[in-house]
Length: 128
Image: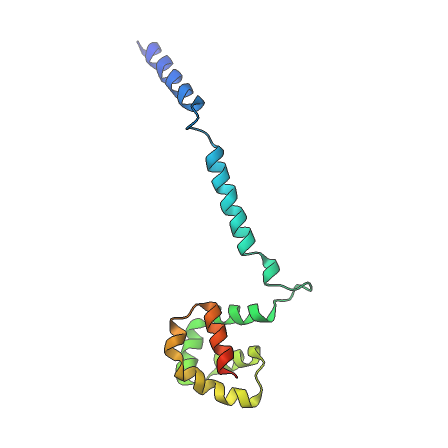
């Protein structure tokens, strides 16, 4: 009786594996497609120039993303070391720096709801 049960289980298992609905192809395709999408969208080539240095636009995005909490505090005050560092990254002259803190402080609410790219655009606009 045990032998018949074991054989029937084996036959059912083999039948399921042989059926077209039980293959690894779909799973493999999904894994490789996702991996391809990740490597394309986060490629280091977009962040670095041919000399291996971070491109200026990406320096600003990285700085604002990594220092968001400290930068938000400085923006709320209208001055501070993180805001000064951002002014340097944006390449502002002394005249633009004097206006930047006030513009940033006035636009603080819109800055909180913005994504990284929008924040960079706002900072650039405030420096003009």
